[in-house]
Length: 403
Image (cartoon, rainbow, N blue to C red):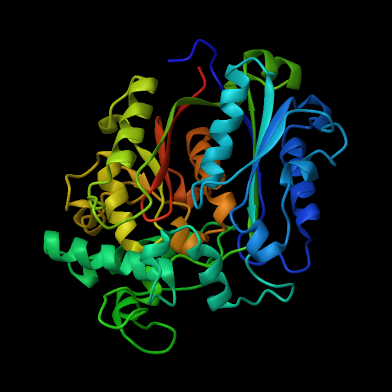
């Protein structure tokens, strides 16, 4: 465990869904000023920062995002950087800031993540987004795929179902549970949408098979989402400078990152080595076991990852993740309250913001500030699992209430 504890001093996010006419510079500024506003801090107090986005070049025609951070008064001339790790970019930004603080480059840092995937009217171009996200796969696995990542994960879903005798209904239950949670999350994209098991299984209307011959359906998929999230991290000295009492914070007690080969073919994606290693490393750093975790946010970009994610957490044996949801163990009052935010499927999936939002929501759970219907009573230990690519890049964290 590092000698210098790192704490989450503040968290701020936009509602997930549509940012409409907000420009990228405006998104970055609002993220930083919003996080600072949560604790009445001046951006001048921030020493270091990292910003995450996956589609800046392909969808927004914008690079050098760190320079946009430096435009916020008080941040010019300080160590700022952009990070990209596909859908794990947000988690990577948190680790980047943490490492800077541990290296002694400062005592207060900010991690920002965002994505603007829709146009100024809030409409999306599915094929354009599909191409933009497709660059995060191996070139040899793109040929013949119109929607590359849904296609890749449809293959993962089929492999999971065949390997473990799991049904489409078993996996559909994950989406249904997450839509039910999203109803109570005011920032969730699908807050106003009801989803029954029958609707999740019936083929018709918007619910269709994404790839002919493979089991993935529309309701098995996460959302195309605009949104931003920002988190202020600090050392003990940094908290004192900010005037933030440690009792109102959460400690980033364990964290790790690992990367598997980009090509899905030829490796065991149902038992992802990098993800399992990163999660165990985070547990070891925090000095805890998976059995102690009672709150978690996992990267359910597709429903099958809701099942695999439970297994990576160590809450279920391989092949038993779907049953964990079916048996109600992932419910707010279950064995471990998983994706109470609504998950990526119903909360939304603004790529660069996702990892930051997962940690931010988990911190709310530990602080007891989640919406009443979603609050895990007496939550004591949280874990997050954020992935990028075809279960390639993994960022895992463990959070504890600050003592």
